[in-house]
Length: 531
Image 1 (cartoon, rainbow, N blue to C red):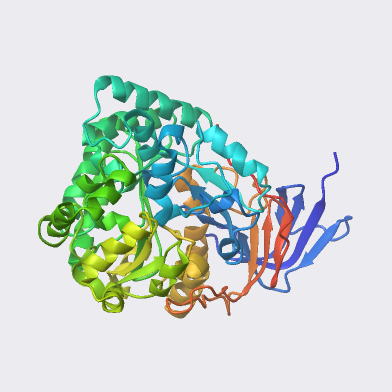
Image 2: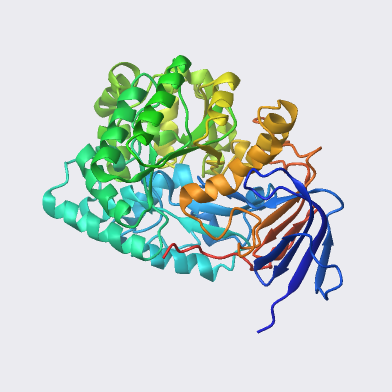
């Protein structure tokens, strides 16, 4: 079997381990690194890449991706590969693509449309994560994809959109599904405890599922129940789950909304959980705004029965008044900072229908003015018209807070990027922004530390043992970049702009990006099954 031999020479190597950068070369045979450092120049190579003194590091790993739908229709996720991301971890927030039973497919499609996107080109019925993996493989992608087993999908398969506590029989069914998904290669268990139907779960349900994940040494990846005034209670729930199950914990998109001084108590809680003898990690995006589905602003009870029932309730004047009251007065699911009491900081980022495109990029105050309605009514009307498939961007924190998160030893970078409409700039700029703004310009950490947090630290958190560092035997996912110029360009006003300073990206030893050229038919990506 022919295996292409590639040499990269004249490189400043950041190997992902935090070791000081060093000059040298890299030899790749097929998809695997076979030498790093002093490499022979006399051998015959099919490909020689002269790095010209630029930095070479492992491919960036996005531990929180929402490319779950787009990966089934596109060979290249352009915003990701163009910023140097070679591996994405799908299946986030407990609401993803497998399993999706046929009887719930249409409701589920509407339930997650504002988060993971929508498409008429794909099947919306997947019996297992292996079924989903095979669909990705048929697309012949240029990137690598791992996938978590989503709690919400598992609950959907057993209980539909019920808000009832799981019975013992239902728990056994959920444990069986999760066990199968992990045996088929899922990277861990994810949940999103503000999303439907994960929000309906009791803590003991999570304990039992986490015991299954623990059996396979896979992480529990969690969007907490609350990230504001009740964040410490939320952390106590995680501590209980970890104590009772022994599972590894990974906190999704670490953040504190509202009283930001609580971040120091949050860090203390993370340390207390780690003191139980388990690994605690987290990821973060380097921006002061977040992004998710607009439907998450609607109280959980209004979603009971699925999106079809939600739409009926939004259309009913009496039910709508109850929803409004709960959002504005009684809602305890999430903080007011993350709700519609702050209309001018909440923006529509994506819709599906052409006549609603005028609202994209507008905040809820502006949408209300455009429609002659109160912002909360304008928001609910938009959700009703779009069948819940609306994305949002919301500003909630400060630079000081996100920089304190960055320097935490538990933290690696992620995009948490929703791809549709007028997206959050993190979709296009997360990793170059982290390296360029925070490591180089702000000197928050060394470039070696920053590369570690985008590569090996991320790989270790997700159990990706064959990539994340430039070492012999590792897969040849690499980025060549200019450490003096790498920076994000995407803004909230104009987000669809590729970063600067990325010169070349290799996936499994094959060049996918060369300056501004993208080889869309490289077909060099792989599905990463953790077996």
